[in-house]
Length: 140
Ligand code: AMP
Image (tube, rainbow, N blue to C red):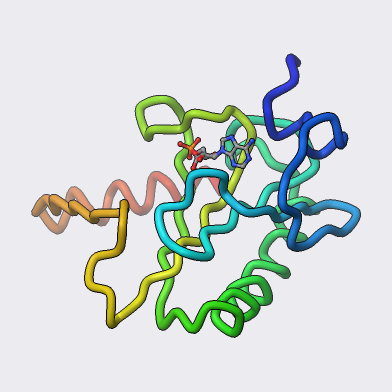
């Protein structure tokens, strides 16, 4: 598997403003933040998709995400967050190494600099929804 920018940051071959690190996880400042305090949280395990991440790495990330959110809130005074993961090209993933964005929101600053949320909900038939839910559940 070829190295991504983030693999190189993990190895120390590229600089980053690190905010947290343990055996499995690294967090650093996004170089082009969408809002003040925008942090990326990544597993040290290589791989592009969350779906392929090991349970151990997933657990390690899950354990520190809230802690990092709390630290950002204390450091910036932000009120709210979007926690976002772009997974795959059609989802807008540019760096092919799993990464969670923690994007602070500031109630007193309106929409923020660069993140606009555009949900376009659909209205599926209830039975179709139930059947798809059962189909997914059977895969778990
Ligand atoms: P995504 O579109 O979800 O793949 O987002 C990739 C993110 O990585 C963007 O928000 C970039 O600003 C950020 N990024 C790219 N290169 C670096 C870097 N060297 N250091 C920190 N953040 C970076």
